[in-house]
Image 1 (cartoon, helix red, strand yellow):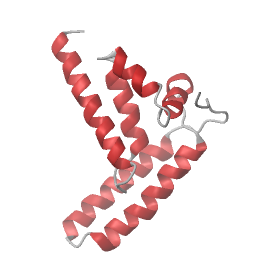
Image 2 (tube, rainbow, N blue to C red):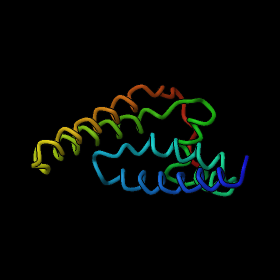
Image 3 (cartoon, rainbow, N blue to C red):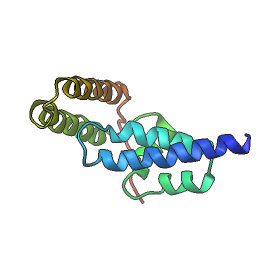
Length: 129
């Protein structure tokens, strides 16, 4: 792969990991899909970054399950959906006053929920080391 494309994928992966980290505390950012995209970007740009993300103590098991079985653990799906519903509903209903921001937030929330709900759920998961 050309060097400039590697830098584009590496930059995108770093940004996606940052957004995923924010998604652990912000309601409208779906962490799991962002991590999956980041892992894909790192797989195409940096073996070192990809290995770091796959071996991460918190995100690694989720990514290993996805990489090997194309599924996410039930607990991760439940946590993702639950936090998006609870915090997203709060943000849209109470924290945002602008009608257009509420609509945009609702759209992001719906896209995130659909994305997570469409992911296959693992029956058995790969545990962290």
